[in-house]
Structures are given as C-alpha cells and as structure tokens.
Length: 289
Image (cartoon, rainbow, N blue to C red; front, side):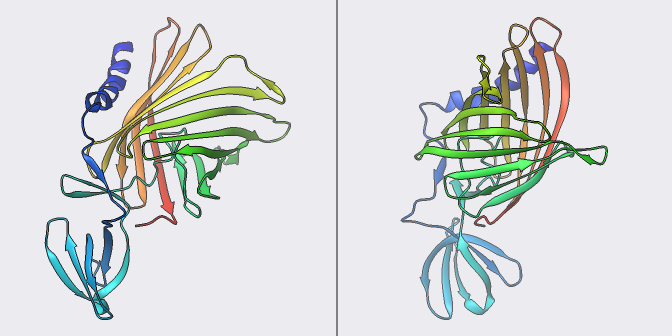
C-alpha cells in the first residue's frame, strides 16, 4: 500500500522533470499580441486577436485563422482573454492557481479578485486580493451544525517574475483562548501550467515557536484545457518523520473548479493509512474572463 501511495505521487512528479530542458508547450500570451474573448448576444464565445475595429464593426481573427467581421450590435462583451495558447488551442487560466488542494502557492490574487468554496464539503473558505501582493484567506469548518474555531490566513508576496513567485504568510486559528498557528514561507517555480511549489513552516503558540519545521512539496501539471494534475505532500516532524501524500486532478471551468483526489498518511514504520477522498469546489469572482 505504501508503494501505491508513492506511485501516485511519482506519476505527477516525473512529468515536470521530463519537461526540464525542453521548451514549455504552453506559449504565454504576449502583451504585444493580446487575445480577446468576444461574447455575442446569442451566447457564442470567440477567442482571437482584434485586427480592426470601428464604431460599428470589430474584425476578429481566431487561433484557427478564421476571420469574423462582427457588428457591434451583435456583441455582448469584449474582454482580455486570461490564459495561454497550447498547440493552437486556448487554455483558460486556472481560477484557483493561488492554492493546491488546501495549501497556498507563491502566487497572489490581483487586487479585487477573489474566490469562495468548500473543502471536503464541510470546510467553507474564501480569499480576496487586498492588493496585487496581499491576499487574505479565511474559513471555518461547519460540523454537526456548529461553526468551529475559524482561521485567518494573510499572505504577502515578496518576489515575483515570469517563473518564480515567493510569499510569506501565516495561518492563525481564531477562537476563545486560541493563539496558535503556523508561520511559513512558500515559493512556486515554473509556468502556470507546469510548476513545483515548496514551503516550510513553523508552528507557534503565543510567542513560542516550534524548533521543528513542517515541509511541503506541491506539483502541478496541466494536461489539457480542462484538466490539471495536482499533488500536495507534507513532511511532519513527529514519530521520527511522517508523511502526508496526496494526488488527484483539478477540473477547470471559466470560474468554477473542482478538485478530486486521494490522500494517505505514512507514520514512521507503521502501516500507511489510505485513502481519504478529497473533494473541493471553488468559484472565482472579479477575474478576467
């Protein structure tokens, strides 16, 4: 069973390694050649570049090279397309790219963006971009009809470029006589479609910090316009070293995402515990189409 748990992790891990040294197949949209999403009044959605426009018409060329001369009266909306072009197909951006299954990545929400959802169907959560660098998340489990101690998780992105995002943050439990949490640093390396995230955190109670760190390794690999493989794993400094491993998929929509996976626990030399089903839902708001 231990081998089965590690195999699921390896299948995702080897994907980014195999791509190392090769050109990422995802070609990010270039500012000088922007793509737009045009929604017509009949519900038709077209993705392409705007070649010409006037007060009455818009000329759009799609990724397939088809030219449409559209009447503005037939257009409901025009907005910048957020995503990437892969093999002449448009892949929408992951609306939940600032997190893996549960933990955060080094990425940050833009100011005014946000999302709300539920972990494991009983743990509601929400996050909002206060600025382009500061994201604040929070939530509270609802068990047996009662709201349990909530948590608050501010995160400040301290560095970012095209391939690297680094952030510092804390996860604090909020409740009667509670003053505990985890302070952490996290970095995400790669593209929006193929990336590795690593993090390290220290638990605290009041002003006392643990001397033993918790380590996290996460992996993302986009395999299609609607599917992303995800793995999120932890090293815990208990019982001589314990592991929480998880792997699964994210189903991507325009604003709605769903995570489906399995998690297991390996404690020292004990028999692994497997498998906890994972099911998360998230809906993004304030995000470019």
